[in-house]
Structures are given as C-alpha cells and as structure tokens.
Length: 155
Length: 234
Image (cartoon, rainbow over all chains, first blue to last red; front, side, top):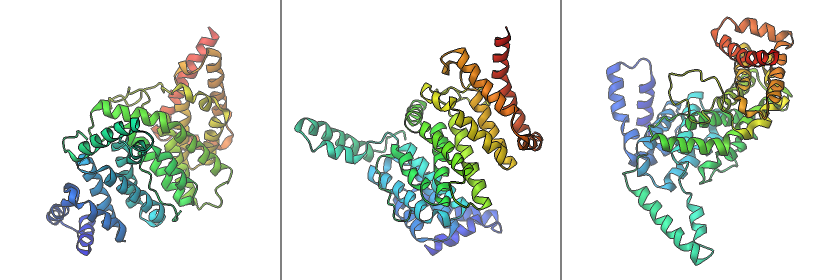
C-alpha cells in the first residue's frame, strides 16, 4: 500500500524525469490491465488518504472496467459502483477536486456499461411466485451467468 | 449523508440515487450535479468504442428515462440558488453550483436526442430535436425566467453559460409547437426577455462580447426569430 502511494506520488510529481515516469507507469500498469487487481484498487480507495493514490486507483479501475467488462460478475460490477457512490457520499466533500472527477467518471462509466444489465434481485423474485415464471427465471439466470463468465463479450 | 448506503443493483435508477446527494449538504449537492453532468456526457458520447447500435440503445433509453428529470433538476437548483433557498453559500460554492447547474441544463438541451450528431465535424447542428414530452417545460415561462435571472445575476463566465442555454432553448424544432402561433408566442417571449433585460444584462453582455463564445449563441437566437418575423410580415 505504502509502495503504491509512493509510486503514485512519483508518477504525478513534476520533478520526476521522463525515464523514471515510464518505469513507474510500467510498475503501476498492472492495476489497469489485470482484472485480479480489482480488490487491491478497492482497498486503496478505502484506506488511502493520499490524493494521488486515490486518483490512480479510480482511473485504473475505469480502464479495467472498460477493457475487461466481461470478466467481472454482475455482483462485482454492482458492488464497485455502490462502493464508489458511498465513497463520494462519505468523503467526497473532503477529497481533492481531481479525485472526485476521477471517481464520478468511474461511476458514470460503470453505469453506462451496465445500463441494460439484468439486475439479479429481479430474477430471484421471478423464481418465487409460480412455476410458470420460475422456468424463464432460471433460464435467464443461467444465460446471465454464462454471459458474465465468458470473455467474448464486445463490451 | 454519511448514514446513506447505496446498494441499488439497478443502474438505471441513477437519478434517484443522485437525489440523495442533492438533498444533503451544499458540497454534496455539487457532487450530485457533477455526477449528473458526467452521466449526460457519458450516455451521449460513445467513449468506449461500443458498437453504434448498442450505444444508441443505451443513449435513447437514458434519454427517455432520466434526461427530462435532470433538466428539471438543473432548473430547480438554479431557482433555489436565486431564491436563497440553499442557505448561506460561500462565493466559491455559489459559483460552482451555478456553473454545474448551467452545464447540466445546457448538456440536457444539447443532447443528441435522435442520433444525428455522431459526426463530430458538425459542431453546430442548429435545430434542437427536443422530444414532444418536454414541450410544457420548454414553453413554461418560469424556465426562461430562471435562466434570464441567472444570466443577469451571475459572474461573466456563468452569464455566458446561461445565455448559451437561452439560445439553445430558442432553437427548438418548430414541429414541437402545435401551430405557428404558439411558436411565435414562444419566440416573442424569448426575444422580449432578452431585449428588455434590465441594465446589468447589458453590462454583462459588454463584458462577454469580447469573447466569440457569445456571438455564436446570439446569432443562433436571431435566426429562428428572424425567420418567424419575416413570415409574420409576409
């Protein structure tokens, strides 16, 4: 965590030379290219108080979501979106303007990418009332789970 | 606000979620307006290279579900600031609220309603293809009044934004109105409001005219009014 904060500060520091910046960017690029880094970025958002690290986490998550949308489950997408909204509600007024801009941008991107995503609670409700609704509910759920786990989505 | 928890899995309910920001403190309200602004841009522009058909479906769905409400929010917030309903605002807060509300208002009025401006080279499309359902809000005198009052009471940068909103408002498609009389009445209201604006407006106009940003809205305002006047005299 501390290492990431140091690197993020170096990345945005005007005193850093171009070579150093390229090296830092290479080290930090994993956050915006590897879907497995989702939780680490979320942890930075939660725990770091350093604006550069927060900006890095938010912009990396935006790249990650845009580039690998199909790799995340509906639950992960929804959780991240709620997480960002809660962060803006709780800490937004105290955060730097550029951090807020990155967070708002991330939230809007997830909202657009998932605009027509079926919401899971609706399907679980479909399973409840009667057998004739239960079948399409299960079919829909299985389709959603296949779609979400496959990587061939255009999004 | 800190007690609120966002756990809504339906992304299309974004305006409801943002309402919680708008009703909390002034700083939260500014963040809420920022979110709405970003949503309007994100849904209007295909930033992620999605297939055009997918982008348009989302863009149209957003237009039908949320855009009118956002337009109303922008006007209500401006009205609230003008009436002093937001309590004591610091100068920075007031500028930010006006700036974000006007940006939102302009963003709603400049939305690519029918998917015609995907070609970025056409900067100025001219006619605003407002959905028919918006008519009562466009014709409502309070809409023009709020924008005009914002124009006369704001700093030059926000005044310019307000004027752009008014010019966009006056460029709505003619088929929005049921007949020529209704359209003429609407344009006459815009024209008289702008022309007989109290002195501070002229002062702002003088400051603003140095930048070319203002000349374009005025020219656009003159076009529909001019065409209307020539028809009336014929």
